[in-house]
Length: 160
Ligand code: HEM
Image (tube, rainbow, N blue to C red; front, side, top):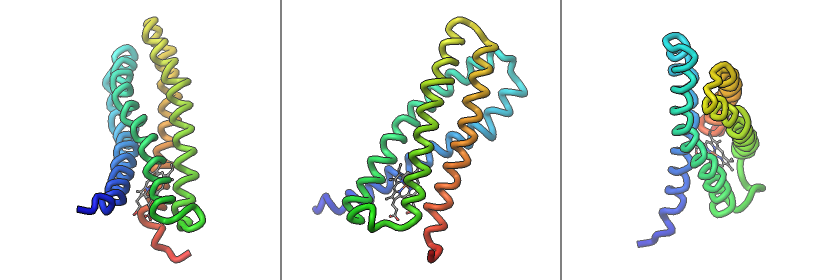
C-alpha cells in the first residue's frame, strides 16, 4: 500500500474540517446562541454561560488555527510546488486566514482573558463589557471566514 497517496487527501480533509469547525462554531455562536442568551438570561448567568462555552469552543479554535496553516502550507509546498504556482484564490485565503488568526489571538489574550478575570472576581458588568468586545471580533472573523469559504470554494472556478 502506498501510504503517501493518502497524505494529500488527509491534509485537505483536516483543512476542511478545521475550517468547518471554526466558521460553523462562530456562525452558531453569533446567530443562535447570542440572541437567545441575551433575551433569556440575566447578566450573571449570561456571562457564566459564555465562559463555559468559550473555553470549550476556543480549545477547538486553537486546534483549527494550527491545523489550517500547517495543512495549507504543506499542500502548497508539497503538492503544488510553492507559492508561485498556486492560484489567486489561495493567496487570498492565506492573507485573510492570517488576519483571522491574528484577530483570534488578540481576542483570546485580551478580552477573553479579561472576561475570565472579571468573572473570578464576580465583576459581572466588566465581564459583560468584555463579552461585547468578543462578540465584535467574532462578528468580524465570521464575515472574513465566510469570504474565505466563498473565495476558496466557489470563486476559484472563475477564470481570472
Ligand atoms: C492560514 C493560511 C491558509 C493556507 C495557507 C491555506 C491553503 C489552502 C490550500 C493550499 C488549499 C487547497 C486548494 C486547492 O487544492 O485548490 C486550501 C483549500 C481550502 N481552504 Fe485554505 N488555507 C488557509 C486558511 C484557510 C482558512 C482560514 C479557511 C476557512 C476558514 C480555509 C478554507 C479552505 C477551503 C474551504 C478549502 C477547499 C477549497 C476547495 O478545494 O474547493 N483555508 N487552503
